[in-house]
Image 1 (cartoon, rainbow, N blue to C red):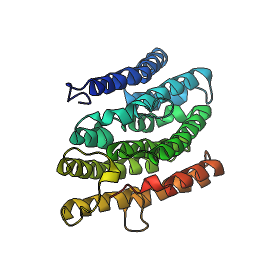
Image 2: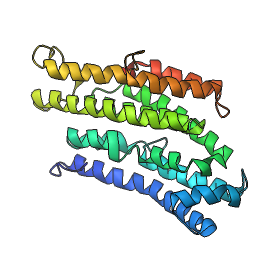
Image 3: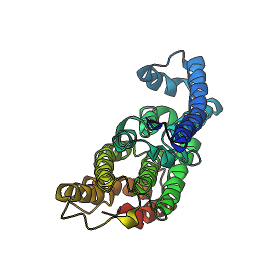
Image 4: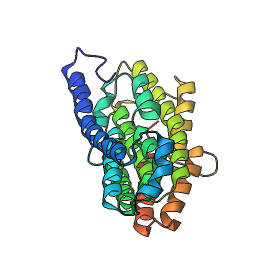
Length: 281
């Protein structure tokens, strides 16, 4: 889907880049699955969650390796540092494809994987801490990167990397429900933003530069309203948006949970307050 417009060499290169980088995470994940099967004799998630506490000692070497490899798989699929570079280039595809990739089927798969395998990660405190640090660093770096972009879809792409960083931060501090809550809220407002951005790009004859946009409120009132709603949820406007409640829960757990730390809270707060949280309308 990324290489849909295959006539352009840059689009084909973007698709190839996504394939190669995600294979790094996939390789780590398959090794982790091999280890799981060797130790527990099953890949059924319910059976793994039931057998793991009986089989593995907390903080043991084997379970740490398994959790680390599964984390690497999630980092590749969910575009977390240092495997995040493929996602902005994936914006070469059509906007509906971008909405699908960012909201549902692809980049959030790593978050779901780690949340479903929470028992394995709880048995490895070191990997839990690494997950939180990875999320914190990713959300800060992606937020800073978004502020210097001019392509509207690349801004939204870096925003997605940052928001998934929030989810990894939540997973790392044991806030499983908060991570999945933000997983769902992000899916809706990011799909809305990408579809609205695609409509703007189409009306402006495939113009992507945000500095050449503006004054479209009267010409595109419906798109203006939908983009404003999506941007408000992304910016977590207090009390009236779902994004506020999911982000607030993550920040609370980053401060107060047993696996939390004030520095993780500060990182999340800085990323939340950065200007990239409010895309240009």
